[in-house]
Image (cartoon, rainbow, N blue to C red; front, side, top):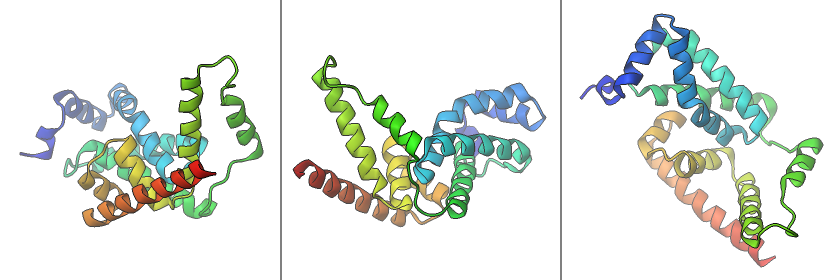
Length: 192
């Protein structure tokens, strides 16, 4: 079974049209993959604004290089690989550790619901999300990327392996380590 036959018929047609310069077809592909491409970038840079910029750059690069897409891998994997490479390059340029700027931190605090007047369930869910984001911040970018690609984006080991350009066993090992580390971090914060 060829890779092209694994693509949805409409996706194959969109790619074919986009390769011929049809911007509407490429726009449909952007719409289809925008959220996931942003998620891949976010898993590496861990800053929503930077991830959105990187997603835009990913689609610009994909459009410029669409002629080089040969269906050896799925279109989504090719696109995610571009996003991952751009995000990794960005991290190298910007420094290894991301930080929350003062204004961004204030905005995050403002978005937290007040327990007064909100349901307890909503407050608990928000608190868990806050703790989970803080725990993810403590992981290395490699471990954070693999856990977000697997657990949030729902990608398989082989696709993550191709995106991150590391062996399948490394993906599994990083995922195992990341899950255990998250468990330990969350348990420690729960006890405090």
